[in-house]
Image (cartoon, rainbow, N blue to C red; front, side, top):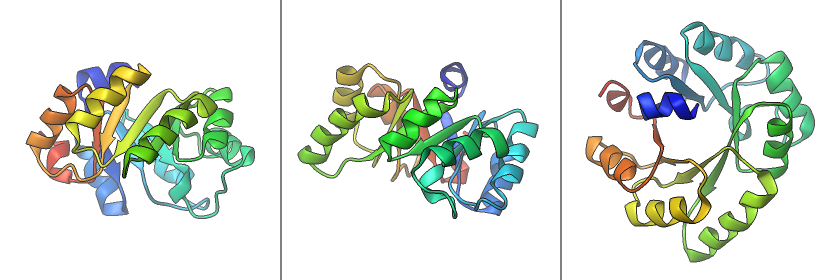
Length: 184
């Protein structure tokens, strides 16, 4: 995933079927699936993979999944996802052990949540970190330097200026549901 983000750092974050359709038409080579259920996530991931893109599933947002090892196995073996996003370190550790790409999502609301994020990283051993909101260049810069783990900025990314700012601050990639940004 890192190499793909070096080539095109915008990640299409699809939150609906229509958003997924646009994501598949975009130049983005990584798609975050932010919707679905255990009944259709395999089909959604297959559509992404068939388009030559990586399918990274946000396990916390998929109806019917729980933050347990069985969910990680399901995403790997049944849904054939390329990776997993979660706020749950235990789920990410299981997913990583299974060979999936892992993205730990953090909501940084204040200095306490920033400190807690640093503690949870050791627990999950995630491949990537996603921080929300992503329109915080100073925080991105500090967190990227401190952790040394590739960082994805997401949430409240409104325009190209936000993308450029996040990347300039040290983010490896930017995830956004703003479809116009997928094509820039």
